[in-house]
Image (tube, rainbow, N blue to C red):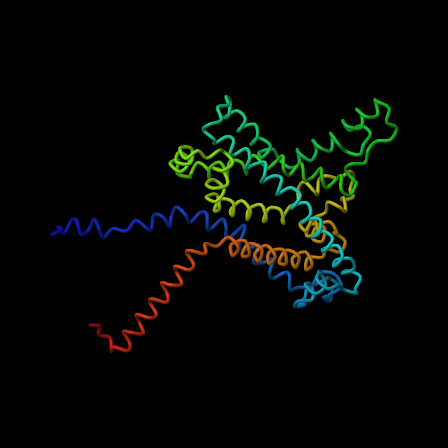
Length: 349
């Protein structure tokens, strides 16, 4: 039998210390993330600050317009302020999807290949740690620096490295790679792959290293080659980390802003690289003479909804069907037991 002192020790709860340690994160998140997010949802249902309503001094006042901002972006509008918002949004969304798809699949293929190679015990390659660090390094370089680097290398200026090299060998006019439709897109896709494949490789390596080594040893004993081991063991067991990689890449791809926005010459944004995030910035900041706050917030909410739907779809496609079937049978068994208990008056024999 436990003594009084032992009972007092067992009754002490340390949960409050956990709340104290996690409280700073939630406070900072609420102030700098949740509250601005809530304000974005509110602002999406208000006017754009110009021509909506004027006070006695003639100052513009935002007024509640309901879902008009969403209708303007998704369907179209006729007033001067909304002209081009509908077409721009869908053009920018198209650019976003093209650039994301064009960099995600090569990135995941390259990262998976390198992750399998670096974790394969049969590959005896010296300096693996050095190559891992070198491949991850582009991820820690700021986007502005990377955009500036590639504009110096392949920009439209005749002083870019590529044009200087070609013009010194007889080419008369400089190449316009940074403003061409597909050439500029391919350059941005390459930049995105170069910056992020190292990070993706590290995540996939952590997933592979989490697989029980006895499975690989059994496959080797049974005579399976590297290809068979990958498709039969490695790839199926990477399902969880692959879902995580897909979700994070999808969220980052739909919110892509820095590289497409900075990869231009002068003050004119490349229309083939402008993404949804650029549309939000352009409506909120650039048009300082007539800031379209409502359209910017509405576009942010639309992007949030699209991201949520796609994320839910990814989880639904990658769901564990066996576990769902087992849970369904368990619920049916519980219902059957309750029905028998109710029919028997609460007593069982």
